[in-house]
Each structure stands twice: as C-alpha cells, then as structure tokens.
Image 1 (cartoon, one colour):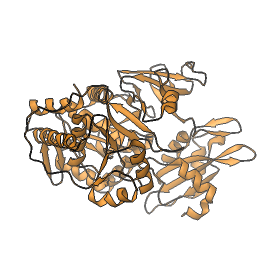
Image 2: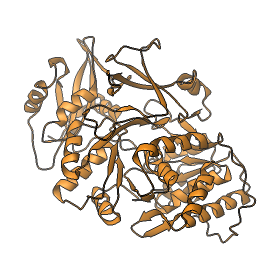
Image 3: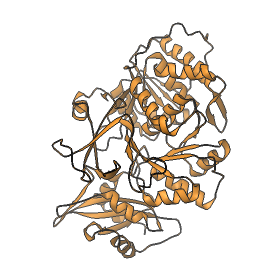
Image 4: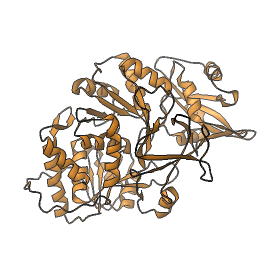
Length: 494
C-alpha cells in the first residue's frame, strides 16, 4: 500500500467521513480521493513522469492536501516550500530540486516569481472534470521518493531530506499507534510544508481515517476558536506557539474540553509551559522528540510524571546515545542521539556526501545531545553546535532557558554563548517579558542563580520585543549570536 492507495482505502471504507475542515467548509474523504486522482491524471497528461518534482508553496488549505496526494498517486515527488521563505531561498529550493512546476498560492506567487526559477508558477489548481475510473494510473513502489523537505539551513544551504512512501507510512503507523484514532479531530498549528505537521498530524490522520481542521496561518485566537468550533481532540504545535495559545487561553478562555491529546516538539518544551498548559487545558502537554529526517523518535507517555524529559523511544525506533568515537555511553551520561528505524529518511536529495555522513552505517546521527536514565527516559542536553563551553565546563542553553522560564514575567528566552578572551565563552540570555510587566536584569539574574550553578548564570540579559524565529517557528540561536556580533544594544528595548 502506497500513500495514494492509503487515501483511496479510507475513502472506500467511509466515503462521507469528513477528512478536512476549515472556516469556509469541509471536504469528505470521497471528494479528497476523487479530486486528487483527477489532478494526478492531469499531471501525467502534462508529460510529467515518475520521479519528477513538483513544488507546493501554499499555506494550510484543502489545496495542499489535494496536491500532496495527487503527486503521490502520480508517482511524482512533492517539494515542500515553506511559506515564510524569501525569494532567494525559494529559488534555491526550486533550482536544487529541479522542480518542473510550482504551485504557489496567489498571495505568495510574487515571491515565487521573484525567485527567478526556471519552472512555471501556477496559482490555482486546474478545474478538472475527468472520469473517475482508476485505469491508467501508474504503479508506485513503496520505496519511491514521495517528498523533499528542505531543512532550515542553519549552517549552509538547506538540504533536501528525502522521504519515500514507505518511510512516511511507517511514520504514520508509529505516530498513530498510541495517540490517534478515527474519532479524532486534529488541529496542527504549524504548516503542512513542515515535517512536524506533516508527520505528526496529516499522515497519521489519513492513516486512521480521522478529520483535520486547517488554519492558513498561526493565530492563537483562531486556534482556540477552531478547537471550540470543531470540537478538536488533538492539538499539536511548537513550544513557542503553545506559549502564545496558553497566554490567549489565560486572558480569554474558550471551551476546550474536547481536547484529549496535546503534543509539542521541535524544540525543548519548558517545564513552566507544561505546568501552565495542564492548569488551563486540563490535560498534559506531551513532549515529542524528532526531526525532519525521522519522527517520532521519543514521546512522553500519558500519565508519565517526568517533567523535563523528552520521553521514551517509540516502538519502531532503536536509539543509542554515543560518544564521539561512536561507543555507547553509560546511564545518565551525555552523548549524541543515534537512531535506526524504517521511518528514517533515505538521505539528502542530490547530496551523497551529506547522506553518507548522516546515515552511512544505517544509524542516523542527529547532532542532538541527550542522556538516558535507568527507566529508559531520555533527557535533552542540547545540540552539538549549541553547547556553551565556559572555562572548560559544558553548559546547555536549554537548562538556562528552563530556569528563566520559571520567572513569572518571562514569556520567551533564548540563550547563547558569546566569545570571551578569559573563559572562552560566557552566557548571554535574550528575554521577552509578558505584556505590561518589567523585571530588572539583576533581579532576573539572581532568580536564575537560585536555580543554577554560578558559572551557568547569564552574565548579560538583553530584553527584546520578540525573539527571531526561523521558517518553522523555532527560535534561531544563530540570529541571536549575530545580534551580539552586530552590537546587541541596538536591539535592546528594556
């Protein structure tokens, strides 16, 4: 069963079941299956052949899901283009993937056009009235590439993470096994152009035959309104987005009793955020760990009291924590997370060197640091390139951020290392305070000192109106470092 057959099977089982919801209407599994089949035939009629790439540059909508599954059915490869990218970034992705065409939502089309790519930019799905017969559709092998998901490129050009029909189906099965069923109404807060919403929400949703509510862009008010209106049962979002939803619920509560499951990941989930979410929504905020290359590696089981842990490995994942020489470390020692699973990507598009470096022996090297306790729970310790080394001591930015988040005035925190001639690096924190509140730098530093060893306490705290975030919504620590280089006083607001 490939991805196209999966959708057809769900439509056959329950044709009138709602597959997709939005503020303007609903789409059944039958209609989603039929329209994606017609569109798949249209692609083939344009002369496109199996393995060729078609870019999708569209915010969350019915069109995105129709495009994805039409490409899967036609044996073509979807190229996900994040809607927050700038023209030069879009141009690189279109050129690197050698996309034959790009579907760009009308309000975004000017960006794609300015990208200077050679492929045509289409701003609407063709209106097709073609026979519904299943004849003439190509045979699509499970190991054919299905989608390219470009990483955010924090160190160089983004890499095209390549997932096949098999890896996406495996991800959907593993994800859905414990947390989703056909009665769910799923609400993703991130774009389907991003691996998180695709693999935590869309694919498991179709796998079990659930419904999904789509918002074109993130807005905390709209998220809560959708939960109330559509009786959503499953909520997913990055920690930064969850923080804004929590703030909105605290200020203007909605009826959110329909929620059964709430999952957050993509970055560390502060304990303070987990506590406030449980207080306001009445259910735990489960932390998930994964990456564009594979997901979901670990998940906090419901009812597990492990604040700060990123959970236990999901069934279907082998997880090692290894030192620089590739040897497994002892219990409670820190090392790099290495993962082997049928859900792992098959490599990076047109980049054999990067593929060999990350997956050469079958184990995915994540670049993330963690430890594992005696009960198998994993604890995130940071990323190889983000660890702050002060006078020979390693400091995890996440640990310092956790301490700052416990202060009642702190809405967001980002911690980086700044060069220091004496100690090598010193700790600098960037902080956003809640609206209408103020906290003195020394008072906040003293607050942190009560919870951290002295050498981990930020030597400098810079207040911002907001923290810089990448296309996926994650805080960009690289951008914070660049602010320091440029002279952070220029952006200090408090």
